Image (cartoon, rainbow, N blue to C red; front, side, top):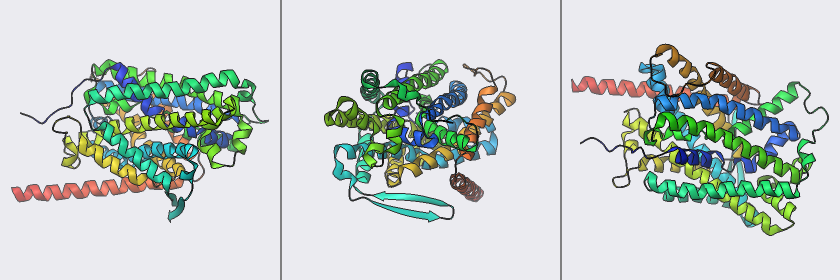
Length: 472
């Protein structure tokens, strides 16, 4: 009797639901002021459009790989097969190592956003916190210790409690959480239609589209934020070992999720702009106006603080839904690596009764709690650059390499207009990395993670080789 295996119970509806929960977290509800500030006006909406096109190009890569190799862990399995041999296992290990940083950072970003909206409901939570700056060479980070930190950590704990069950039970809760998420966006859009002044959505400042260094620097920053908000369309690939009819379900789930979220994001942000206007958002100096922009919108539109508080509560549920989905998907990756013998064996354990990777879930949640002490800006910048350099770029090159090395491989879904999508994705993500002021700090962080990963991998191989020789 072999080790217990994951069951394929996830269909298209469940896959799209989990992707949407992952994608529509707290991001679009807190990042609009950051997006506007990047380009100085509503022209920043261009960042959403170009971010969606970049997501489609990248999504094509995920769709082809996910349909061809529907296994738990997603990228971990893809890298090993795309590059093959020792290089493939090394890159899979490097991906796994960066995931130990980026996955908890993703979870923490949702929890930090949740705690920021909590200060709108309970202003006392925003007081008494202390910010500490730590600098190591070119890299600096802010650490926040206060009531909001403990709210963020409590959100991680609640997500773990609710995820401590098999996938069938999780799917039921996912549907309920998605209903709240979509209802919140629908209320915002209806509010914009009823109370908004839509001329404000296209009230561009003079010279808004003058091409030059400032324009492209601003566009890069705007696209970085938009990319962070779109990410999650690939969540279903991490659950590949639990997807039913994966060759059809995974590509459809990836591309449908991107299309649905693009429409929702454009409608949501246009509605906020129509009510508050870009000048008011850019001029806002108090933290509440920036942190809880949707709550401010509802209070202004409906002329009632109660409407703002209801909106804040709904956004908190939305943020929690994303945390819930993130932990679910990412917990399968260390599990897959452990089952493959490329990570700590304890991470490959399934719960004896409920059949989910409980050790992996608990470890990632624990690291996410530590990441909740970081500032939101540092969290977003670090996780985006880490992902681009040590995951997405490797996949874009790898999918083309796999086409050359294994043309006979069964591919239930072949990306459209190949090789345009992976090439454009490489160029687009490269632009995001180098177009930002001070991007070197995040690149240095990715480099450190890569070097440390290589050293650990080589050292581990030497130890294993010595043990095998001793056994002989």
